[in-house]
Length: 90
Image (cartoon, rainbow, N blue to C red; front, side, top):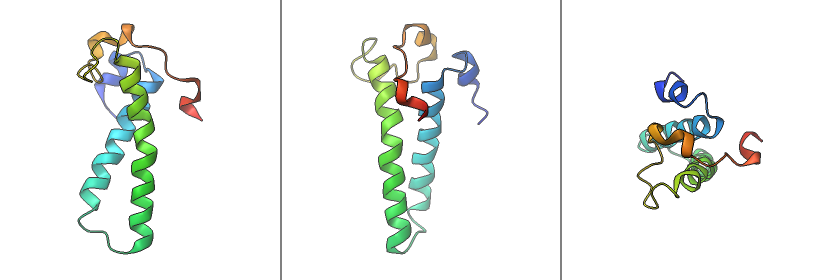
């Protein structure tokens, strides 16, 4: 993933997982139109549930800056973000 914001945040692990989960969400949205079959739909649904965790974590990490979620991707505040949960990489 070549997103310059990762480097801007000194490779912040929680933010990296957040960006990857957003990419999964975008992929799921684009694939949804072409997918048929119960198994693949269930897999995509599971991916959506899994990607919601890093998104929620990033929101929580930044909610003290802006409780409306406007600072989730605001890398200029990355030094003010809370630490990523310990379970981020498990």
